[in-house]
Image 1 (cartoon, helix red, strand yellow):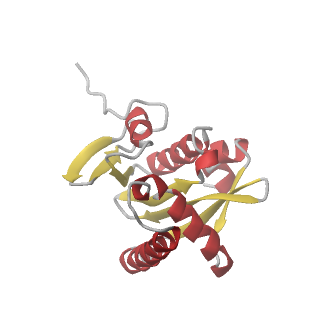
Image 2 (cartoon, rainbow, N blue to C red; image 1 turned 90 degrees about the horizontal axis):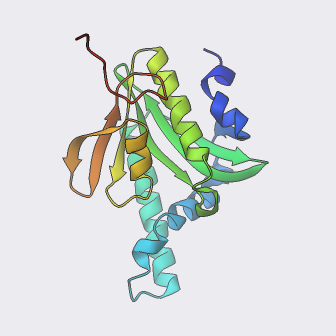
Length: 179
């Protein structure tokens, strides 16, 4: 399947996916920090302490992902030449595992995440695979995953492992049985 067919919704939303490079690391660190700001707002830490903590956590996450998902695609999401997010994906024989998907806060709620997820759902469905992701229970996008047909497969404490059967986007994610 051609990339144009796979990411047709992303293309319609003028999104471009490209492999990340070392030049993207400062952006990726800032993106990571933007996803944790609300969590750190309640601490009494100085801005310097928060920045140091977030950098340490970003580096730890990056090392963990690279170690545990060696075959993953590490993609930067761009729109109009501006880096707006990241998509980390590993295609396993049984499923597509979304390792991480994140957009800069000002680009959330505009349908970009939905476009990317629906494209991944369709890509996986075309080869009969499910799509799975770990989602923090307090993640604002949690409802989006439910709306797209993801279901909780396993409660992992702070995270839920969610999965969606290998059915095309736009279906409710449930397998139909004959009556």
